[in-house]
Length: 274
Image 1: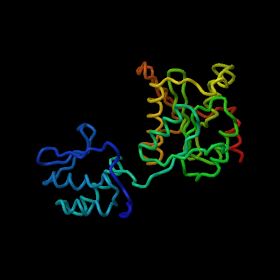
Image 2: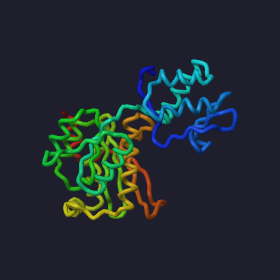
Image 3: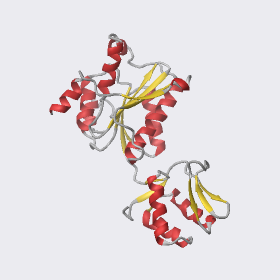
Image 4: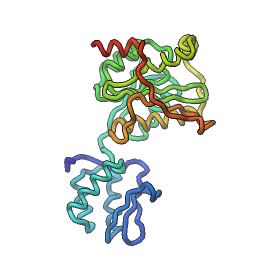
């Protein structure tokens, strides 16, 4: 890892002393990283300095000053980065397209999580907005049921990493996740619904500004934001095509599945022959 790489502790990261012999990175010992050391309070204090941005070299040096040898200190920093306890300090961008309550909730959560949130300005056409962004910026398309096909086609052409999110009555749907230009696109999921209900696309056009369930919005926005974080940090990246059905009223009914590209999707076909 580049020693000058800027890092910081992720939101909610807890650095605790575990008795007189260890530091524990998190309250749940079954999942938290545990660092055996002779001066845990000093090591914990050094790690807590990463609540503010620092770099790998500086944090390693603080751990050495706390009593660890150089190799151990560097390995601890690398392990904490790989497990997501330390994350890149540079604020990554994410584009969120949509005007519904769910879209606004995703924007708010992404901003609180540390992303720079991009959105179309005023009457700016969505396809112009997407075309003007860096291709490396993940795009989240929210509540696009029955929307203009050009918007979704532009997202697929210009952004290899996309996530679809939508309200489904009192439930929510996150996915499919499209990675590096591979997997089902935002149009595939709608075509899948049409296969089950031939009138789905006509019904969806009546949802210009749907009255969305607040519990479903919160739960779906949290899942979508977590998925974006996994894409940006390249940690625990979901499988191509993964979808999550969110049901806050019946958590047992919530489930995850993988959606393959729809064989009749015109957007995927155009992407293959381009």
